[in-house]
Length: 406
Ligand code: PMP
Image (cartoon, rainbow, N blue to C red; front, side, top):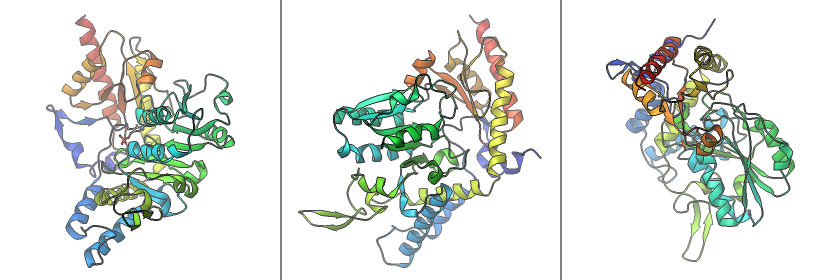
């Protein structure tokens, strides 16, 4: 039986809002998802019952807070199949996690070394590497992938003994395509490069197994998988985390401090300076529980069926250009020649429909596609077929109106 999103819409109170006098249709899930009651309640429960600083005080509440916080780490470790909870480092999100790695590996890079990324990266998985290259004299190289997620040139020529770091997204946030990740990782590993996977757009939709992927680092944000903002995780293999020089220093990450020297703490604390985002970690663990209590392959199939329904309705329209794939994606990314995407966005908004118009923090990819930006409708498990249809109807209405204006 097909998945029925109404079975869980009631868990997301925000979805019953009106927006601009219309029922809200939230199709900006690739930017951030809405949060289920389970997550909201977990955060409130923490503040009502367990709030104290972690790892420090030896008192009743502090012990409770520490237990919940460390249990949350275990939940995340299980969620991505990390072998041990100490391999999970808390971060503010994907961006901070990538910066932790980029700064942490700096001491291993020399002039002439190469950092390889793909042409489908979000700025978060580009700018930190570019800046690292500037600082070290390393060379940033870009593996060209087509918008179908296929490679253009002889793939292997981009991987060499000089490739020290390979960083790639699992799924493009801008055009929704999955990259040939396992194959790229294999090439990178053959060259002995450190490998990092940006899982920001993957974790909400796919079951992630970091041991099967066999990457050195895997990073993601809680807010894109029904969890709170301001929390995410950096998974790393033990040896990979051990070589990172801490990006931030201060309290919590130390064992012994004198004016002359500091002995750092063991993993995972060594990479977590300062008071952490305790309620964020607990909220993110609740989001993992929410997802794990669902039939995840049914959710994925549903989200993909929404995207392919929209694709099939719109791709026949001669004046719509679609950049996302027909299948195996959970979003639709498009533009309409002669109409500004912000005008389409404004019309959709006036009808209560929230989408995203812009470069999606992927300006080099937009340049490759020959556009300044696209209009992106991205689906989550609570979206309905009626919402997908209304998006198509209102978009077509907007196009008619705006072309008439010409
Ligand atoms: N990578 C990808 C693929 C993303 O979609 C995003 C968020 N749009 C990021 C990185 C950055 O995530 P955050 O802003 O949560 O750090």
